[in-house]
Image (cartoon, rainbow, N blue to C red; front, side, top):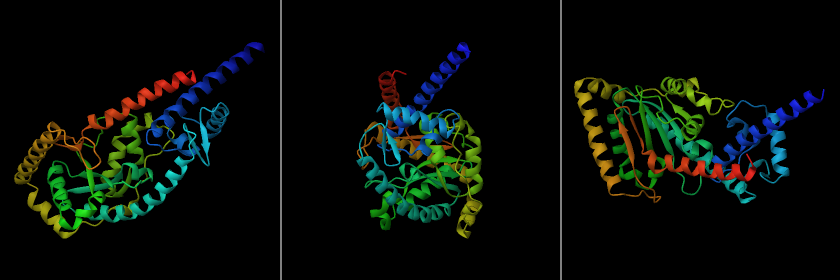
Length: 318
């Protein structure tokens, strides 16, 4: 009997420490964005399968020891009520921006070779501050990414959009031959699970299926649901343009735009140019992808996350 009790106590202690470690990982990650989370959100981002009852019990222990703070319905590592105010305001602004984002996504889908459009970035987490952009994740037809991207960016340079460029941040492209995300980590898994599909159901379903590796990071979360009715009708001019360029000429033009864009962005990186937010500009390019260079944000964020995680683990005795 005594041995059984000791074993149960040991198992309980191990479970508590594992759950604390998992909770800490979630809160540390989102704390980098000053973003408190609900209990349900924490559960969905835990690294191991878990029950809500176990999470609530562990959170209660963390609240008692003041390792974690409850702010209204949110949990945070910071005892700062202004975080809740900030998040609630951000949610209201995001709701308004998402209405615009849906209309713009349907417009972008009408461009030649665009096969799917989704919303990423902070807006996909239903948050927008005063400097918020609308970030788009775009899937194109195989081997036509660079034609599609060039046409979209030429459209963005339209003088009528001069004061609305923040609504057209088309910064991440993959084509149907490059749907597998190369960088597999907590950042890319988070972006994948929070992506909001807007148009193009077939390609975006394939994207989620190919990137099922993301479940190893968040086994309690479901990938975004793709509605059957989000596929927008392709207009005649899209069909016409594609029929004209579905040949060797189209191959040559696509390769030319890839080389041209790559040269231009390498020059920007060499000159250490900054965007309007004061961030280093960089682009990682390939035949089947065009995405922000990870060394300027992605890698920096992960290093910062690991450093904070180590510090908190020591403080918590994990």
